[in-house]
Image (cartoon, rainbow, N blue to C red; front, side):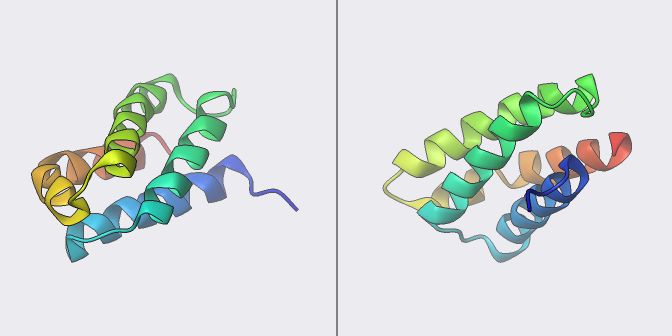
Length: 92
């Protein structure tokens, strides 16, 4: 049974929050973020303001997949991770 866009959004926010608090992540988490974002971007039930945030999150996941130092990548994006989750919370 597929996840609703609300559940996908919750999962995405959980992963990003964990990255922000734990300052570490894995390639598989970045790949999961990428899949979630792709699915949410084509969903008409997702607020347009959230979709603009999702574009940034998608770029974050792409760069995370290809980085040689995942922890440093997350550390570099600490402020954005918090802003993205806060922004998604405003519209969901």
